[in-house]
Image (cartoon, rainbow, N blue to C red; front, side):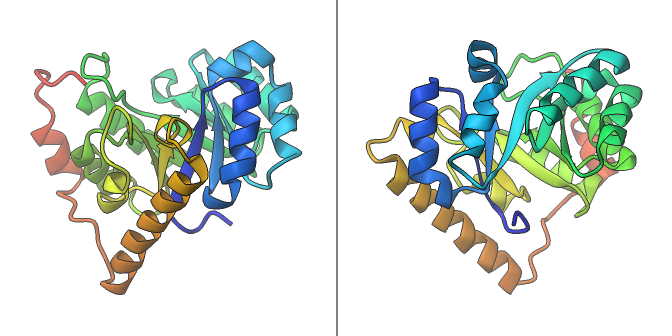
Length: 244
């Protein structure tokens, strides 16, 4: 169902509005991502409520940040409550990430690599190492900032075509929709740009069609992302002057 590029709908609004939004725009998105705002306020039961109104897979954006034993317990809790995947922070390291992957190979584990805001304390070198680790461990995908398009190129150069790349920082406070897809991403994480618009369904449809047009052009031209390559990418962004 999710072989084609598209939208990962970010739900970080209130429950009533979130359920209404999914009913309105569900046909135009590929995934639904539930953020900690909803999960902390309403619990994992919100996932089952979403499952009742959409066939789209639900990703719990827990951004798990813990040692292996507790990371695995958190992932299991999400999976036991109908989540189809979770997000874990790459800075947890390989043992924690491996423990979550081995928990259920049918689930989709995304590794968070880098922040969208300019003063997050993960530099490009560390982010590249997390991407390589996710590749080597067999994660389903990685999360990369869509607000930094060249970082998407770097990530694609590291993980190749084996892993999915999802990008936050699209829309309201980041790059225009379609940007991340052009630079090699598979899914753009979009929330406010859709639910704060006057007509969320129309906006979701418009963005979905834009992504499909870009993807079609890429396929037609046998598109290869113009990657600089993992090593050159790392060296060019390695100066620790560039904290992200």
